[in-house]
Structure formats: C-alpha cells, structure tokens
Length: 208
Image: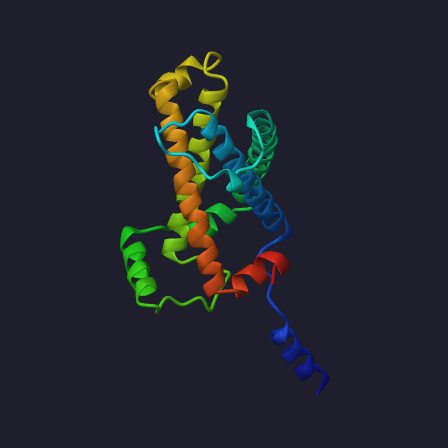
C-alpha cells in the first residue's frame, strides 16, 4: 500500500522544467530589454533617424535626453553581463544544444502551419517546438546586433573597424533602430503566446 501511494505521489509531483538560473536571467534580460527600449525611444526623439517619425513622449522613459541616457546605459550593462551569464550557462550545462537543436527548415514550416491552424501542441512545456527554437535563436542574434550597433553609436571613434562593418555611424543608427523594431515585435508575439498558453508564464515563475 505504502509503496504504491509513494509512486502515485511521485507521478503527481510537478516536474521541474526551468532551473532557477534560467528564470532569474530571463526576467533580468526582459527588464533590461524593456528599459533600454523605452529609454532608447526618448534618445531617438532627440535626433530622429527617420524624418517626421517620433515616438509619443508618454511611452518613453527618462523625461529628457540626459535622463534617458542614464537609464539606457544602466540597462545596457545589466543586459550585457546578464546576457553573457545566460549564454555561458546554456553552453556549460548543455542546455543550448539540447533546447535549440536540431533545427530543420521543414520542421519550422510544419510547426508554423500547425500554429496558424491552431493545432500546435503545448502539452510538454519542457520541449521547444521548431518555431520557438528559431524565434529564440533569432532574438539572441537581434540582441547581439543591438549591442554591436549600440557600441558604434556610443564609441564610434574607439571602434573604427566595427563602425566600418556596420556601414558607418549613420547606418549603424538605422541598424540599431531596425534591430529594436524586431525586438519589439518579438516581445509582442511572445506576450500574445504567453496569454494563449498561461501555463508557460507559471513555469517561468515557479520552474515547474
């Protein structure tokens, strides 16, 4: 009787899906990205890349250019060091290869079609489908582009090679803006998907 009850309780116990370091780094990255985006919009308004386009002041952070720069740089260092920690831990624990690979174009297409038809399964939250794998890998690349283009904008004279790779200072600003737009689009889609599968939010909070 006892062993069978113990086995039943073991089966009923929630399974740990996200370790603590993943959850903490995820939320810190999210905080840093949002702060950088909102403060970046205020910085953009001070010298628009595209004539005639500005962000509404009510959705920006910093109040004025100097305040926005302070917020932006503070979030930048948080994103940089926390991002390095996240990548290093993913590689060291084998999670990167386990969670994001293999990734095949056919699998992405099939999962995309299933998602559009509302037939994509989310029963196993410990497993990323092909669309999720591609999206998370792409957003990592977008964040890297944001950091590199941001360095060119911030320290253009000190990094001439990087500036040339970015097509010059002015084009680096365009790259930075476009990368920001892609990150904003990812955040919107990510929030929508969380709303559709609320268990994923609980998993990222509790780990189970």
